[in-house]
Length: 343
Ligand code: NDP
Image (cartoon, rainbow, N blue to C red):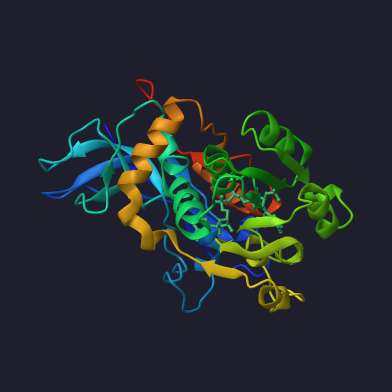
């Protein structure tokens, strides 16, 4: 039985610089009632993702800005608790985009039923979901690595980066990762089994460190961070190398335009290919991603970590934590209990 009221997180004001908790507000509101043809879903996990920072800015981009005073949106996994339609029945787990709230109604469009298969359902927000697909298409389709290539991955212990590293290993590449703590570096070496990893916060010059780790140069750079990471990669790329532009999190909170890479000319001198991509343009790859990733997980070739923050009231802190490197692997928020043992 659903309660009468539930909680949702709204955007109170547009953040300037790194968001603070005062930019968000938590509100109690009646649990919506499903009409004929609709279901009521209780959220169990929600995702916080770096791209959400861009949607907090009032500007034209590839996704519309979040509206002030309205609940935020994002990936979530929940369970149908009331159904007034034939397709989704009570008890079914579903992947949706109405995170940041405890309950929501839907006519089912945009909801994907998820079945636990060798992984808990929350993995559909991480390794089996959007971040995993991003790593898959970004590395394989955009980066096109060949066996024996050297791949450098930024934010390597994060949701996307950690999967990129392991797909690189599966493809027979030498993988070098950069991350922001010794604990992350240890995880990369011991669990993700990369060839080398370093804590970028503990090195003097990123360019020199990368040169030391990749003396023969980098064939594929998987860019998640921007700024100094991009400059270091440009300096260390091999001729005809490929740079996969996936994200630039170091720039998402810049209140002022940040200067571009001072050494972009290296792209000319080394005949590099720099290519950006958005995972949403590659949904045609979901089928092969799901079958490859399912197999790699079953074979123990892909492992993953999650950082789980408890309570919807802590969702803003979890989101802000992404910009402070507080997560190893996928950052998730547990919104509700897992009665009956959420798989
Ligand atoms: P992560 O799980 O990697 O979390 C973010 C991590 O970024 C932090 O843990 C932190 O790790 C690192 N970071 C934060 N601020 C900085 C900074 N100023 N300098 C260097 N590192 C920083 O997030 P995701 O895996 O979800 O996303 C990774 C990247 O991929 C992001 O840029 C995101 O926007 C992008 N992305 C792009 C998609 C696309 O379609 N193109 C789809 C999904 C994600 P550390 O401790 O190592 O610093």
